[in-house]
Length: 285
Image 1 (cartoon, helix red, strand yellow):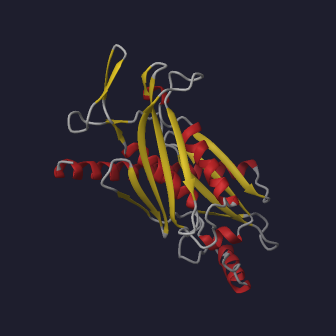
Image 2 (cartoon, rainbow, N blue to C red; image 1 turned 120 degrees about the vertical axis):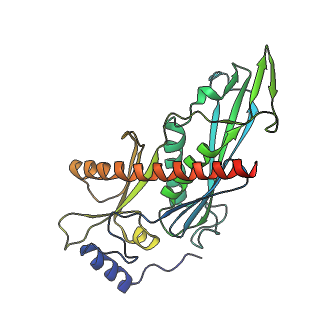
Image 3 (spheres, rainbow, N blue to C red; image 1 turned 90 degrees about the horizontal axis):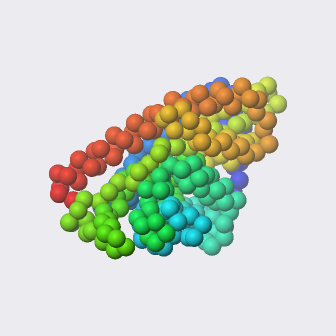
C-alpha cells in the first residue's frame, strides 16, 4: 500500500520555509545530515546511516574463470533491491522507478568510474580472476538513499580484504587469513555521490537548491541533480532528473560546493576505517 501524498499544509509550509532558507529539520539548505558508519565482524560489512536513512553494504569475493573478452581483468557486480522493509511504498519483487535510478547510478559511480583497479584482481591471465560482489540492502528510507548507498558501497570496498594468493606456474594457492594477512583492494579513487533537490514556484525567480533531501523534500521537489566527485576534485558522474531547467553557472556552483562536501566525507570515511582497523588489531581479529 502506497503512503498518502503530502498534505496541502505540509506542502505549503515546506515551500514557504525554503523561501526563507529554512528546513523542517533545522538544517541550512546546503547542510547534510550526520553520516554514521558501523562496521560488522566481517571485513567488507558496513552499515551507513544518513539521518534516519540506513543502508547496509557487503562485499565478498570468489575466484572464477575470466570471460574471454577480458582475460586480464577481474569482475565487479553490484546487486541492490529496495524491499518493503525500507518503506511501505515499495513492493517486494517489483522494481520501482526510484530503485532503477539508484541501481543505475550506483553502477556508474562504483563500477564504471573504475574506482577499483580491475587489473589487480587478475590472478592468472586467462585462467583465474577475482569476482567481487557488492550487495546493497536498503534498511530504512528517510530520503536520499542514493548518497547513503554510495557511501556504504565505497566504504565497504575500502574495508574489504581478499585472501592472499600464491601462483607457481599454473597452480594457484589461496591462503587462509590465519596463515597470511588478507590483501586490501587496489583502488584508483573514491567517488562519493551528492544529491541536490530543486524547488521552483511562481514566487521564486530561480530554483531553490538543497543538499541531502529528506523523504518529504524529495517528494515535493521539482527536480534533482546528483553528482559524483572524488577528493581530487574530479567529476565522475552527473545525473539530472526532473523538468526544472538549470543554467550552466548553477551546475558549476553545485560542483564547487560538492567538492568541499566530498572532502569532508572522505576524511570521515578514512578516520572511521582507521579506528575500526585499530580496534581489530587490539582484539586480535
